[in-house]
Structure formats: structure tokens, C-alpha cells
Image (cartoon, rainbow, N blue to C red):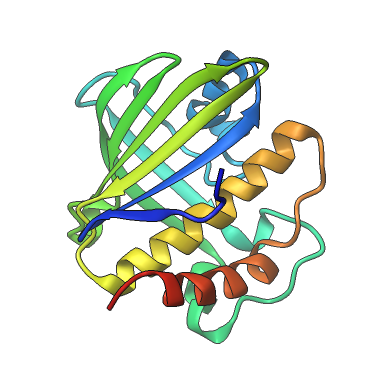
Length: 178
């Protein structure tokens, strides 16, 4: 499986990962605030269609052994809050939610889980992205956050978030067509 996400439509990127199972454990890391906070963002999530959700990011605190955020991303180092709503929820296989509604964003995240032996396939599809710049940023962000998730589930210490993000974003700059 290629670690890099692929563009599946002019406004959509899809990233797949094989993660240590079982599926219920991975689901918990997607939906429970404390566990999700170890790789992405904390925050309450009402897992019913129409339910409110909040993601509270603090990328500077995600990993140890990190560097300061690059100047371009400095504003994303402290606490950031993003609000959305659950669109679909079918535990432990499907979670769909809107992303960053308060910023006028109309994008949507779809997370699909399927058992694959003792592993779990996670497919993250982020759609309705407004620009190429947004696609590059979202792709690099998901790629980096999902790497941290894989490490946490495997009991490994993840590389630094900012240390990883800069080269990953540079690669997505090359991969996502202008």
C-alpha cells in the first residue's frame, strides 16, 4: 500500500493505512477524545447524524522529539478549534463528518474501517476541498497525523509532528497537479 494519498477528484484526496487491530480499538482512537488526542485532536463528538463535534488541535504537543513549526505553519502550533457535524456513523466501520465549518469550509471527511486479518484498513477520504493549496495542506496533515496514529497503535514512539510535516508537504506539492 502506497503511504501517499491520491487525488481521486479535483477536490478530493484519499489516504489508506493498514493499522494494528482489532477494529474496535482503531474505532476508539477515531472517536474517543482522549485517544484521538494522542494523534489528531481532542474534543467531544456526538456520534449521531447531525450530532455536533469539536476538534481541539494542539500540534506542538502531539509528539516529543520535535522541532518548532515552520514559519508558514506557526499559527497552527497552539490550540486551534474546529467544529463540524456528524453526517453518518456506523460503528465500528464508518464515520463521516464535516470539517472546519466555522471557517466557512464545506469539506467533508469520510473514515472507513475494514478488518484485514489481524490488521484494520483505514481509508480517509477528504472531499469538497476548495483549492489546490488546501488539498496539499490537508494531504500532508492527514499523512502526518495518520503516521502518528499508526505508531501509537503499534506501541512505537512517533517522529516529531513538525519534523515530519515539512518534507511530506513538499512531496505533496510535487504529487498534486496544479
